[in-house]
Amino acid sequence: MREIETEVAVAGAGPTGLMCAYELALAGVETVVLEKLTERIEQTKGGTLQPRTAELLELRGLLEPLQRKALPREPVGGHFAMLPVPLDCTPWRTRFPHPISIPQWTVEEFLEERAIARGARVLRGAGVTAVEQDGDGVTVTAGDLRVRARYLVAADGGHSAVRKLLGAGFPGRPGTYVAVLADVLLSRTSDLVPERMAHISELTRWEGDYWAMMVPVGGEKYRFTFGRADQPEVEKSAPVTEEEITAALHAVYGEETELRAVVNAGRFSDATRQVERYRHGRVLFAGDAAHIHPPLGGQGLNLGVQDAFNLGWKLAATVQGHAPDGLLDSYHDERHPVAASVLHHTAAQRVLADPRPDEDVRALREIFTDLLRLPEVNRHLAGLMSGLALRYDLPGAHPLVGARVPDAELVTGSGPARLSELFRSGRSVLLDLGGAIPSGLELPARVDHVRAEPTGDLGATAILFRPDGCPVWATDAVAATVNV
Image (cartoon, rainbow, N blue to C red; front, top):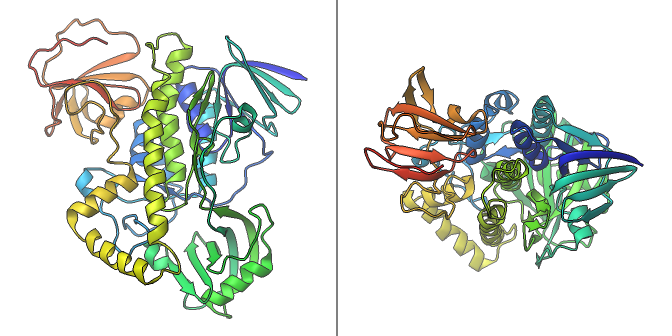
């Protein structure tokens, strides 16, 4: 049995686990990622970065190099329940108003490279088989490897081994259907097969007993999602056959559409569950290990990456001994309600997106489509689906506290800059916008004091931001006192 000691162990090398590993490594925390797969599966799966996720990646300077790997896509908004009205994020004053199409495996590959460059280690073929906690840390067994860490982050997916080993409650409801997601190569296509990535309402078809969505992802490769309204009984773990993929292709896209090869395929359901507590002693749950929901609106990958952004700096501060009381527990307090909201609105979307709606659901869809054309309704749902409307319930009277602050343009002593550029190091930022902070103020080394002039009104004369870009204090005063 090989033995390793580290400060934090992360179970799972998906986007959530790797984002958390990057954040920990950026803060100087020794981190080991344990992944049961011996090599990455190049399956499209989650393929969308929502605007708020893009903003968070921009805080660390990670978005631009990742965007270079994006698939071509029309600049069109997201959707609610696959209704034919694009969601408009421009009223939320974001630099990234449209979803960005990047296959999940590409996101994983990129984040793994960046986490390793920061000092994290990723060990493959190391699926977690045992977890034991005590007052000082966690002992994780992964095959012939025993890892001793102060904390463990469970980011090992919807079938989380860590969650099962701990017996953590995962209440919710089982799925009502089982569908197929496959990456396929087509040797010939009919006119019904889309030639470009567009709004989801243009990519979805219903024919006979089948519903399907075909998304071109480059060359002859497509992401093909389909199910059947008559719901033949099939186990979620049952292998997907070429015969059933071919049958669905012919039924929805015509006999002239020919399957050349199946790159990979699997099944998914619309099960909805959420772990009761995100913290179990020295184990923290994140991503699909903490919550699963119907795959409507491209929420899953984004919800997990945003979990990691919230957790990473808090866990690093705890490990390094400068976290205030309750900081690590605030991870559950802030993120559990966010996922609960996603579970709630995806449940509503499941009704509206029923591939075989009855007369009542059709009427509801028509009314809801009209509502989406109203600017205020569209803005509300765009903020909900994109994550731009997120606000944490933090103590403080100022309206900026806990809110998202748009990426404003600033003029600093060293020249023009954007607000997002101040967070590259992963430290907190005290932004002085009008000389409100007295000179000579002593700040902890982990806080950067930046004097700047905004090109527009940010709504305060000084703002104290956490490492994840969330304001925790703000003032309108000309001269202010701040406790950091």
